Length: 416
Image 1 (cartoon, rainbow, N blue to C red):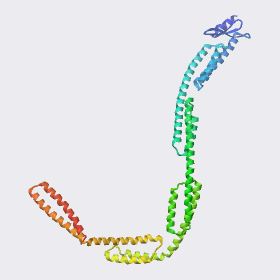
Image 2: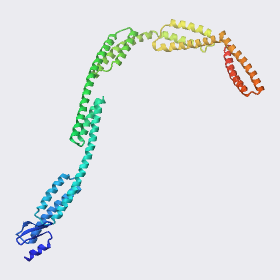
Image 3: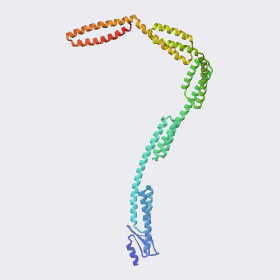
Image 4: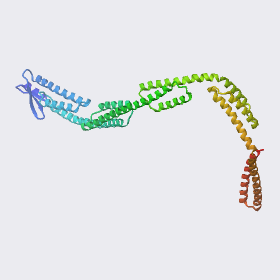
């Protein structure tokens, strides 16, 4: 039995009794962990040491997972409880107290981790609440304001997906916000439905108005009252523009009919006008020659003879008759410019020969001469008396009167 005592004394954590009972030493004293009858005590202790190593390995693995991964605190705590029970009742030899101390340290670390996770979750929930409040606020704005139905509906669908992707928050707030989001989507759908219902009703009214316009246009298509009918078509076109738009299919069909009737009328009118313009080409040649003759009148040197010459040209102009439409404005405008030049020359001649106007101009010149003479006398007296202020006033008045005299003499000269 000498060998057993030596074995016991050399192992700090356990021993094997004479009857083969294996004990482990803990802070609370010895505890039997098993029995060994098959060999030497060293083999028994080695076996139970291996059991201890298995437990120590599990503790080490848990420490690594707690410190090096995002192991959930609840899972870590459950594992600690199981390991603590296993170590407390372990059939093993080793420093079981050290393992329990390591588990206690892990318990504190996991508790700290739990608080960190809780704080992070609180922050995430607060952020998620802000995200969902923003989603609901935008949805309510869309439901209340937007009339861009396609983009608004698409955006509401995107907001629902953003809601689903966001973190969950407390159940009461989540339910209240979701109720608002659902109400916004419902309100948007109702407004959109009402809008399109009203739009359909409006388009039906537009269709009726444009069908009336088209019927009138088709009734006028064969008219030969060119002027009145062209005006009627312009009025119908204005009515068409202000009537609004029907559905695309109806709009295209009615516009095709309206344009077809309009084209029929204007093509017929153009054909008639083209035929008539061809017969008026000779008249245009005559008026071209008369315009060339009239252009020689300007510049006007003798208004009376210029008027007589122009009067003769105008008489022949009227006899020549109508000209094609595309030449009418140019020919009439050219003759009108010459008539304006002759009239202006006549007006200028009348002004020069008007005796009353010449008398008024002469009277103005005479009055200014007398005023200047009086001011010169006043200036001389003021200079002789040394009255500087009177001298200055007289000089300023003289300068003004002399300027007026120059202008009056130029006006008088125009009558000579």
